[in-house]
Length: 294
Image (cartoon, rainbow, N blue to C red):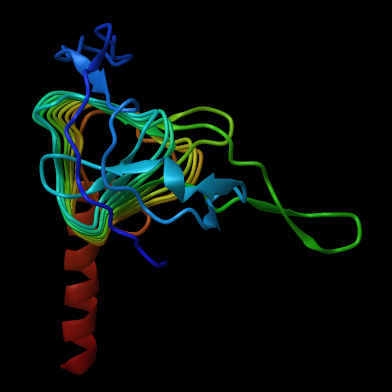
């Protein structure tokens, strides 16, 4: 897409918007938000492009942000302390709180809300979501894309189920590089406050994760799973769809949850069972193997 640069002229008077409320489990405090639609700043070329939902986007509506050199839609509400690095873009009606940092190559989709002090790395794609205060979103993270939902119609064809809802990320959440979190289809996908997610984690649509959970690398959570508070999933744990895991559960690496876990404690194996049962099974297998060799 060609970019036509015009001479930067003086910035006109700011239009002040009222303080926004943030719909998460704990209140978010935004600074005063500004809309720069009345300014005469560097704009992108006027050629229309297609957005994710297929609608035309008039690139003439995008202006150059004064702090970092990125671009933003003139209808976006952005605190003046926000840093939008060159190559990043903020779409229409998005709200960015004070001291948010948006890395180069990142795209903030329409109507996204991001709380104060949140840092977003390079080449992230953020859409259909709200993100709380003091979060860290690492490079390449994708939040708010459609979930994997299909059904077979009467003619035997695969038909896509509507994915129309959002993702809600709480406060003080860390999301590792190249992690994907899908938007909801029948309820919002939710990540609770203070939860920490490692690199290369897949979280399906409609998943609800409680507060202070830890998900290690390559965890895969299928759609519509409910996870309580203080849950730890070791590396490469898999969780099947529509199961529930109660609070204060820890799962060993490479475990697979195939049914509800209703009691707190440590679990492991495929299918996941209480850890002492899993260890006993491993010991029995090892003894049987050694007897066979002798």
